[in-house]
Structure formats: structure tokens, C-alpha cells
Image (cartoon, one colour):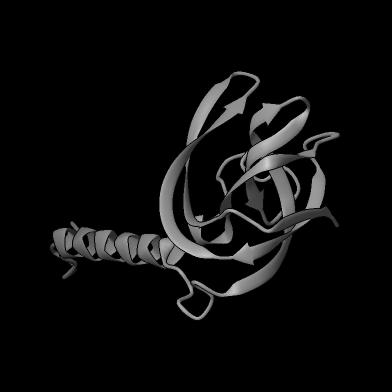
Length: 134
């Protein structure tokens, strides 16, 4: 019936796939003006690795509870942070500032939930000079 009305369903599905790919690239692409620059970024700390109640590896996410619910934020709105000296974490809603050189580094991180794990794509990385409470 759609064909009789002049609609090419296969062409529409092909366009849909192209749009999905364009959106995926846009969500993962980095801002080249920020790469290798010293920046100060605010966000929320989502621990990936803890030592002595201190987060030594975490995701900096843009909103409270990001990655806890689906879908996660776009990859280019998150930073994978390695901070060997660690920062004390009182809960999952800890706002922080990170200071340092921003790197374009795509990765997939495992985020733990109460009912399992999920893989989250991240476009940036940093080993900051400082992590401070917001």
C-alpha cells in the first residue's frame, strides 16, 4: 500500500540509518578547541574505583545521577578521570571541579549498578592536577 502511494520504504529506512549514524558521531565527537588545553570543569563524580573511601578513578558527568539511569549522557559530555591521590566521596551526588589538561581519548567504561553493570562510552580523559569540592 505504501509503495502504491509513492513511498519507498527501503529508501526511508536507509535515510533513518544515516541519521542514526550522524547523531552517534555528533554525540561522540570532541571539541578540538578544548583538546590539550588546561581547563576547569564542574560536574558530578561517579566512582569507578575506590581506595580507602576515596575515588581514584571516576567519570565526571554533567548531571546528578547520570549513568545511573538510561540512557547515559552523550560520550562527549563525560570525562574519564584518573586521580591516584583520590578524593573523598560521601555519596553518588558529589559535585566537584577538575583542573588539568583535557585529552581526547575514547573509552568504554563499566559502570556498576545495584542490579549489574553497563558499558558507557566516554570521549574525554584527564589526569587532573586538582580535584576539589564544588
